[in-house]
Figure 1 (cartoon, rainbow, N blue to C red):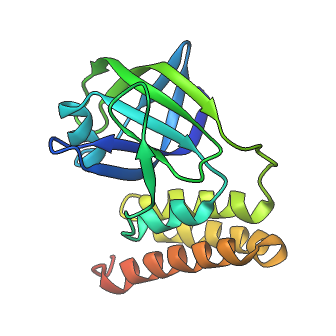
Figure 2: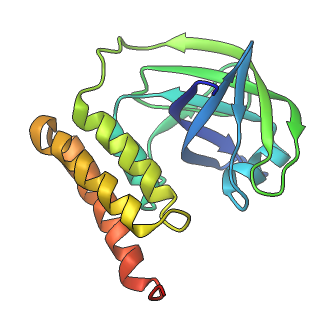
Length: 191
C-alpha cells in the first residue's frame, strides 16, 4: 500500500476562486497523486487549472470545518504555481499536474512538486488530533460505509478525544459528530 498523507488541498476554479478541501494525497516518487471522488469541486478545478497546493497543517478544525461546509479559511497566493496557501499552515507544496489517469469514480492526477516551503515546526499530533482526522475521513464517507462500522469506530476514537483534546479538537469533534448524526437523521431507513 502506498503512503497517504492527509492535508488540505487548495485549487482554483475558472474565475480564480479558491476551493479548500481535506484530501489524502498518495505518495509517488517525485510527487503526489490527487485522487478526488466524482463529482467534486477539486476534480472540476484540476480540469481547468491543473495546479494545486498541498497544505500540511496540525489544525484539525480546518479538516472538520471543510467537511461541514466552512470554506472561508484565510489564504495567500502561492508563489510558483497559480494557487493559494492556507494561512497558518506548517508547510506547503505547490503542485503541477503532469498527467491524469482517468477513472469512473476517482481519476488520479499525478503531480510533480514545483516548490516546497516550511513555515513553522511540526511538534506532532496528540491522540485527539489523530482521532479527529480519522473521524473526518469517516464523515466524508458516511454515504459509502455501513452505519455500524462508523458508529463502532467513532466510539473507539472518542476515547482519545476525551483524554487528550484541547478546545480546537473538541470543536472539530463536535462538528464531525453532528454532521454524521445529521446524515443518519435524514437517511432513508435501511432494510
